[in-house]
Image 1 (cartoon, one colour):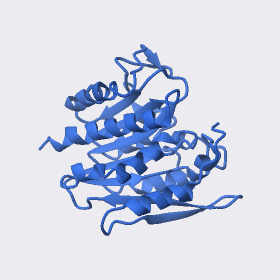
Image 2 (image 1 turned 120 degrees about the vertical axis):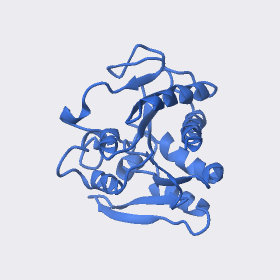
Image 3 (image 1 turned 30 degrees about the vertical axis):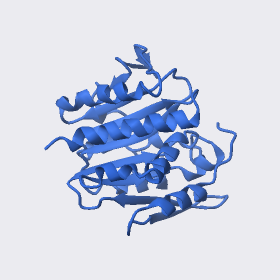
Image 4 (image 1 turned 60 degrees about the vertical axis):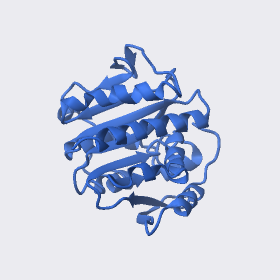
Length: 254
């Protein structure tokens, strides 16, 4: 658990300040907890563009660098590089309660990223699932790992030729942070910092968000894991470079 207190309203204020043009927050759900009410929000940049991606963070509240990376993506105008190609949907913090207190779980003590196959999941998961009204070219989930010596990622998809993307991402991230080159990461077989889900995910008892995304027709699902042993600035930059690489990869495809 992260002992440092965070304020989700400060995050939302930073994002609102840097949203370009007429783009604004959509507060899709006001979530009540015993302590206070939290907003679950999304925002979309480049609405109507031909490529569609969703970028999410903060489903584990004690992994703040993904939330910070989304803020930085706006503050540093990185979207301008993709404004003519991409419609980007952002879910900046899927577990605001956990984010504020530094807890992996939500206010009910549940790991939200294990509940995407449940028929009656928590409201945070219902909100995330509601975003999949149409299929995406790409979904990117920003995570952190407290045990890893370096960056790594999970990838799944419907087009085997896109498997090259994981390697391209790590080739760029290695300039910012070392890559975890262990043969086993988080109990899964890995090669060169990449974990590929080989089992039939549909038969599994529980699904993370990436499995739900794939079941909804997403072409490429990426779960990006940075290493908390590095400073926040380094972790955020690693995520930003990974996002840029993934978006550029698909931007060049017809």
